[in-house]
Image (cartoon, rainbow over all chains, first blue to last red; front, side, top):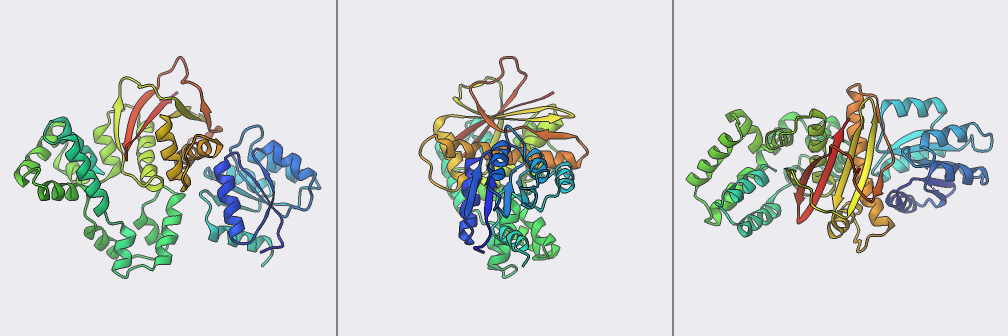
Length: 125
Length: 285
């Protein structure tokens, strides 16, 4: 799974570290890392070759839902497949994210099998 | 888990010493057989299935058996057979107390009767406790007037068992000891729940290391993020359960704070496990 360009965004250094190492385990390199919604939106607007973004929901400055909305409203970042990674999968968040065009959801702690399945789907396999 | 409560009861009554209790708990820890291992041993489940259930268990508020049945790995009958084979902590405690000649069977039974009476429990309650029913244990040992706080603590106990791999002992505190490190997260909405985890530096590192599954030696960003993520996970599962019940609540960002709010109505609970003392401060508004 080497051809996907992946970005990750979570305010927890531990989650970023675990996610990054799980992705590396299945041969995926993380191109962009960010620790809040504001930072990821800024970084993605200036780097348009990201295929998949793993995005936390509860974050400072800008939440994952707010970041998702902004990304989907910008032609440059609209095609990015956004996967919400969260411990808070309430129906309210799910509805909001689905309405905004989320690609998938993944629960913490990260499960490599789920991660692999999502990335395969993102690649259209 | 009930063994922690009955063991501490025996300690508080001066029936056994703290050294004996420590020894008993160590022995108990060594001999506790997990359901997954029993299932593997009996050939009911494969290693892959057990791992799949263990991973699923990390993200939900469900027991091993529940998930295994949902996934079709176990039938109800097989689960019951496994549960019967898994000695409860109370049975193990009794066995160890007997084996070590600390108490006789008559004495154990007498003190269990006293425990029941002092806590105003029925025979059915006691049966549930000795079967390690976490909800019942928390309900009988803590006298918090608030049902939400009760559920919060029950979930926290389960999460400590799942993610920190220890069976905790919970008691309500009247005076708050001085703890330098305070993790905080607020649940806001239809009701507000303010949650704090208070730890000393050494215990903070221990909790972080166990949760992160790596050896951490100092309080750096990774260590802090591990404890905060544990709190976030607890609160995340808690609000999912509450939202399912119809409450409109949400989570704020978890953070390390310098001090507790000056004016507060926090209730404090000491949660002890494996030499760690974790204080939960919580208030509902």
